[in-house]
Image 1 (cartoon, rainbow, N blue to C red):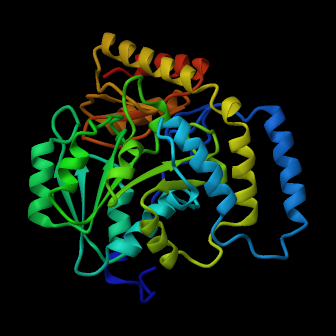
Image 2 (image 1 turned 90 degrees about the horizontal axis):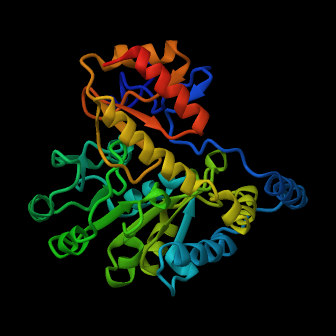
Amino acid sequence: MTWLPIRDELKGLHPYGAPQLDVPVRLNTNENPFQPPRDFVEDLAATVLEVAKTLNRYPDRDAMRLRTALAAYLAEESETPGIVAEQIWVGNGSNEVMMHVMQAFAGPGRTALTFSPTYSMYAEYARNTFTEFVTVPRRADHTVDAKLAVEAVRDLRPAVVFLASPNNPTGTAQSLDVVPAMLDAFDGMLVIDEAYAEFRRVGVGSAVSLVERHPRLVVTRTMSKAFGFAGARVGYLIAHPDVVDALRIVRLPYHLSSLTQAVALTALQHTSALQAQVQMLRAERNALVDWLSDEGYTTTPSDANFVMFGKFDDRQSAWQGLVEQGVLVREVGPEGFLRVSIGTAAEMERFKEALKKVGH
């Protein structure tokens, strides 16, 4: 691309993405390992057939039916009654709705802040909106120190703060006490990224419960993980209706296709079946943390559908060794650590066998 008049800050960069290798066990992108149930697939096919008859027309610009259904789901899941469609915004994955937040509230002369190590896309959202990007380190246990967080937002006055909970790649859930403390200390937008929230342990709360009291709080979710719907690309957020209206200004026309809206609505009608394996994946995750600890690895208690583990003297060599055993994990996060997604029971056994052969 060197011959193209590409922006200077993009020269030499590579697109975001995890390795896509043809191996028997792929545990590197935090996908739900279970295929959709047959009755859901049949309903989905019927839905697509019906919507196909109307594809000569543009979709509902504001996706009101889908937003209404997501409000009902989120109100029950987060035990927060009273959520309405006007508080929900939907996009092609939670990546898009977070980009909408950046387009509306960040930009040249403004700053975005996050707490590292964390999801690498936050830096790209900032880069793509010409926003200065600043990170503050997490504590040794990968949680965010409330005092340091408050000091950081008070000093930097960021336009947007990203706080992932559960955090990717560490799996760490953040105490909700930090949310009001931070919002009292600055006048920007606080985005709590809850992509993995449905996998959180019993007793771990959701920031959705705080939105009503904090109009500058945004909570993002996705249907990719707990719903096993990664291929559909559906993400959403809950916020004050005025925030949602601001995002409607920057969205592209008809950004969410009729097919996407229809299949997401169908998925929400099958919530129980699609999320039936969530508890199973939680149990597999907890068992894996215990097993890794027994094997002498350092792990962090996880509230997501993945586990970070280490420490390796040469993690790239360990990653390659697992690939050679037919198991693909992710080389991401703090130096010396790897991240493994939770798969089926059979896949986790294959991972354990491979890791024993690779060793530390």
